[in-house]
Amino acid sequence: MKHRHYEGNPQKNSPALGATLAYLGINGLLALLHGSQGCSSFIRLQLNRHFKESIPLNSTALLEDSVIFGGWEHLKKGIAVAADKYNPQIIGVMSSGLTETYGDNMASALASLHLERPDLEDLPVVLASTPDYIGSMQDGYQRTVEALVDALVVHNCIKGESLNPVSSADAELSLNHHANPASALKTDVQEAPYLALLPGCHLTPADVDELKEIVSDFGFRPITLPDLSVSLDGHAELEAAPVVQGGTFLEDFQLLPRSRACLSFGLSMERAGETLRQAYHIPHYNFPSLSGLTATDGLILTLAKLSGKTIPEKQIRQRNRLLDTLADYHDQLGKLRVAIALETDLLYSLGSSLVEVGAELTVALAASQAGTDRLSLPVPMEVGDLETLEERAGQSKLIIANSNGRQAAGQLKLPHLRAGLPVFDRAGYPQTCWIGYEGTQRFLFATLNAVS
Image 1 (spheres, one colour):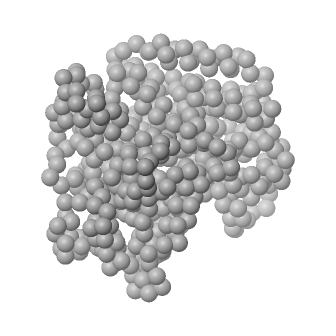
Image 2 (cartoon, rainbow, N blue to C red; image 1 turned 45 degrees about the vertical axis):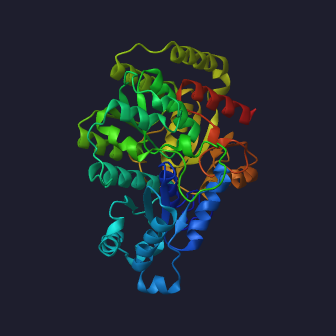
């Protein structure tokens, strides 16, 4: 195969887009891109096409002179204007390739702003370094979740609040006031144990919702960071807002020390989970995949061990249905040749579940290098673009990639199952659930229907 020194048809998104996705899971947050207005517009376009929702994202709107002399003052002004105009509960800043190349020191700019505006010191500001030339969407999402954990948990930049255990009544109010206002008034209910969840960017809002439901079946109360199942689940809003509506509440961070354990999902979330383990001395379990029989068994057995409860009948029933599906369609799934091009965590999750049922992976192309040396599939996980996919997927029977993979599928005249981000030519992907026993069954059905 010829070696190319360029990306002819990139499959990856920018790290700043991944950072935006992570910030969109924090309630009351104003996301601010430190870069040009065009960069923020492109991110909004990509996420808007995928989620069919208005995406609240601001930028420091750097111009030519800022590129030459630095955007330090632009960042200070951007934070100050955002705080004064929109009154957010928290501001999340992400860098861009432009500002990282120049070398803008965001922490220094924030410290300088606090000297000039002491009234803004109590406003939490999270800074995430996400240059465009390092990694892809998954890397930006990972860096941002780690920045959130570091700022709000380790260094506790929620001024005036303590991360010490709070009262049962306050805990009930924090976790329920955005889900069921009526239940928020009930303070006499026996408190259930908390479980910290760190979902990776490969999980859809529906996946996160299913994950929270599985955890709740074992009697736990999930604290999800970030929580896209509330903010980007496709609910109707009366009007667009400049800050995130729904997601993880700042009050929820106060409950993290009381978590019985931390569960992280996707290898990219392992470091953030380890940070919580070290900060609060709680067990941490990382699950590289939640799709497939074996992967789901691992989660269910871990929850049963942590809760001390028997596995709910609902989960046993769903597992039996999945087993029946494997028996019914083993002749069609076995030896099915599949080419996959996705972000690493999603590539491994879907790829490993297909290998489990006997399918054969012909190509496994990751969007970036992150994690490819620690995750194992029958074929090597390589970094490649969609042009590489077109060159090497000719002997396959199915392509799994985001909507931009449609050109390769069209050239090769192969069926194309949409997955990842962006998916803009199929309806309802953000509400697609492919995790757990039931979700794995749906994924296998989608695979079979795609090649039928």
